Image (cartoon, rainbow, N blue to C red; front, top):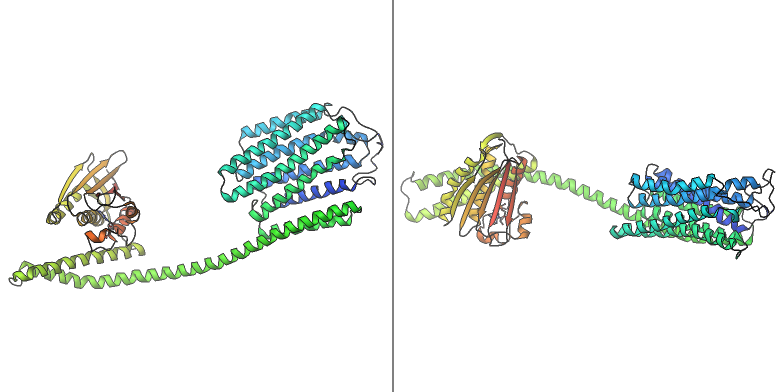
Length: 559
Ligand code: ADP
């Protein structure tokens, strides 16, 4: 084709004597990538990766447009004007690809100013080259082409930047692949293959063809067109990422529309492709896209079905949960009523047993003493159990009331120790009280509940210690404004499994029954809940079974 120097262009995008491969390689690649880019962008315009993908596809399509114009147009000055844009667009495109990969692996997080500066520094020389005559040194008027006259330094520079970008992307993907979870690893692999193939084909083929033509080993620079097929590979991987992995937060129905759109677009080429070669190429592309599309749609459908099934199960579960809540409330109410009913007769039993034992109804025979004591002991245990049940039902129904007053925890603990010492001594244990205080030890809590908590823990130590001692230590930490009560025993201890669970409802250790059969597994649950509700906490430590235990109650100091 001979150039016309001063006339207006005769052909703009379509010329009669051009090979069908030209349109086949250019038109679908540009339209499909623009379509995918626009589609991803429209679905989530705010996401950085989506935005960048769209800009990449615009750059690519502009490159393709210039390429088409330079093939078909025969106005020399116009082509010479357009030529430097090849280099500019290519550099911009590869840098945007690096930026895009950053956004992709960082799940949308933007890069810092340092990396952005590097991007700009890499791009700036290309812009400077392009605006001077270093980018184009002459023009081939016979072939209407500037292919051989592109400035060497310009070409080497932007090709070097392209390879730097390809290696950069590779390094980024490898780095994030190492730490990614299984699902994201697959996405990285797919994205990496698609993008690297695209860039390698796009950069390398054009460069090699240019070089070979330069050294006159190749007379037909048409081969360059194959470089564009890489973009289709990239777009297919992007589509798979969209549909299969929802990488761009695009909805399912929209993804299906995208697939159908792609197939229709490729099929529509039949309307203008005339040569046999073109028809064969289009058919092959259509078949490949069709198969990939069907496979994807199938997997998506399967997923939808699974999701629907999951939804049904979730609904059923929610209903069951509601029912359970109602039942739980009923149970709490029942426990509360039943416990109240049990409490009054029990008070009578305990009262009369104690009166009989005191001799208020006359002297009791020696033989009756032990049974009477048993009655009294059992009634007391039962009263404690009932109190536990009532407390649990109060906590669970949110009816536990806390009446906060200032009290001296050190003094209260000492009193409790004095009260419980006879019981310990009866079991052959020593119960020691010590304190190490810098403050007065005042806390603002509910007196009754605090007594219950401390009593419960010391009682537990007595129950679960067959021999040895129980030490109770009250200490404070002025800096952290907290007061602690340590209850240290030499009893049956707890293994790590027990330690993990003892504050749960009805939790008792396997070795608990040996030491004490009268247990509900509710005492610690109630004590812990109450301590936490008053701003405190209870912690348990033990080095293992038979190695003793340390329970620590803590509360915030009020002065
Ligand atoms: P209960 O004593 O009624 O079983 P708790 O809630 O008070 O219920 O205690 C729960 C479990 O924690 C006990 O069954 C026992 O296994 C363990 N436990 C509590 N205190 C101690 C302790 N001082 N030494 C060893 N185990 C203990």
